Amino acid sequence: MITAAGYTLSERLARAHAFAAAGRRLVAAIQESAGDPADAIRLLMPLTQWVPPNLPGTGPLQSVSQDVQDLAASNLRCAACAALARATVRYQPLSYQDAFSLRQMVCATIAAEAQRCADAGRDASYQALRNLVAAVGLDLAVRGSSLPLLVEVVTAVSMPSLAEAWTLYQDTAREPQLVASTGATHPLFLPLAFQALAF
View 1 (tube, rainbow, N blue to C red):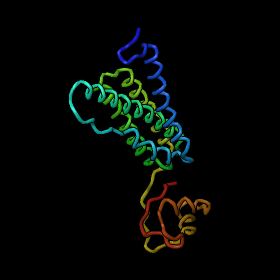
View 2: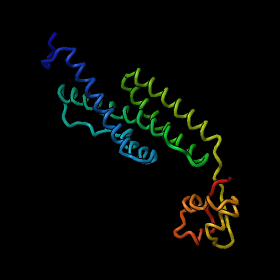
View 3: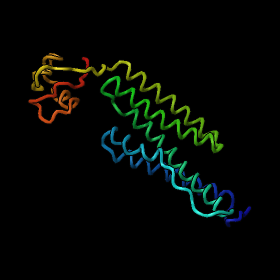
View 4: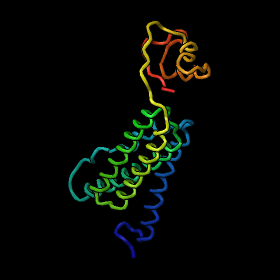
């Protein structure tokens, strides 16, 4: 059977599948280009929320074009949500708070796309994304539960990072981690107040 566009139904389905596969390859390439899972998450987040502006005009042609654009954007966002979930699995949170904040951010982002799919009547996509939210939320909750808390450390005078690492942990090997978490401009002068891992 030939459709109005001049393609058979099977040809149109093949083109649709090829387009969806291209979206998955695009987000996979973005994910693989990031050496660190945190970078992959940062790069994928804007794609999961991308909504193009409405097309100008009125009438049947504009309506069909808008539907096609909306479906293309949704396909890209769904692929980005799946890649975001994979990057989240690879990410190693440093603290309970880190895992909790990432869980809140990623789950809210995927849930927002699930709601868009539900509003558009794409029930299968909605259910798949809701399952993804549950899986990501459970994974980060379990991994985060065994991580140390970030605590506020207040000192009377600025301490060198090696001395502070020994004071807090009795382990100078954790000095680079302490410098990174405090954001100190120089390791000889830590701030008077900073956050550090509890153990």
